[in-house]
Amino acid sequence: MFTNPEQFASATKTLFELQMMTFNALTSKAVQGVEQVVALNMATAKNSVAGSMAAGKEISEAKDPKAAMAAVASAAKPDMAGAVEYTEQVKVIIDDIRKEFNEAADAHLAEAKSALTALIYDVTQNVKPGSENAVEIIKTAIENAFKGYEQVTLATRQAVETVEAQIAKATEKVIPKQQ
Image (cartoon, rainbow, N blue to C red; front, side):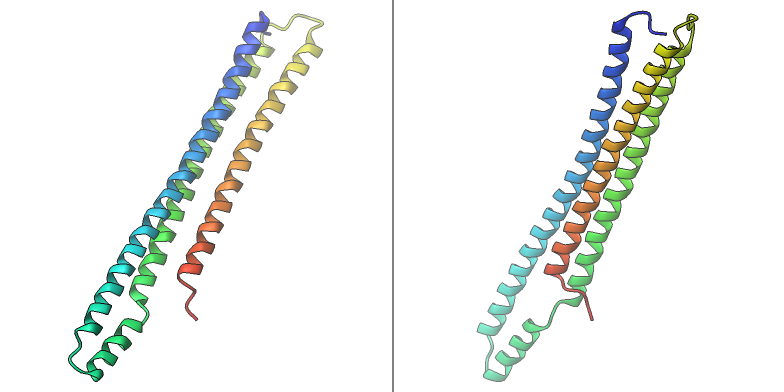
C-alpha cells in the first residue's frame, strides 16, 4: 500500500496529467483537420474566383454574340471534376483525422491502463492484515479515475465525430450530392 499520502497524490497527479495529455492530443488532431478543411475551402474559393475572372474575360473578348453565348454556356457548366476532387480531398482529410485520432486515443488509453495497473499492483503489495478495506477503497478510487479517463476519451471522440459531421454538412452545402 502507499507508504505516505504523497505517493497517492503523485499517482493521482500522474493520472490527471495523462488525461490532460490525451485531451490535448485529441483536440489538436481535430483542430488540425479543421485547419486543413479551411485551407481547402480557401484554395477552392480562390480557384473559383480565378475561373470566374477568366470566364468573364473570355466573354468580354468574344468577337460576336454567338461566341459570347458559347463562352457563357461554357462558364455556366458545373465543374464536375473540381467538385469530385474537392469531395475526395475532404474525405481524405476526415479519414486522416479519424485514423490519427483513434491511434492517439488508443495509445494514451493503453498508457493510462498500464499506469493504473502498476498503481493497483503497488497498492496491493505488502498489505498489512486489517487493511483490506482501505486497499479496496483505494482500488475503487483508482478504477473510478480510469473510468473518468475513458469518459474524457469517449467525449473527445464524440467531439471529433461532431466536427466530421459539420465538415461533411458544410461540404454538402458547397458541393451538393450528385443525383
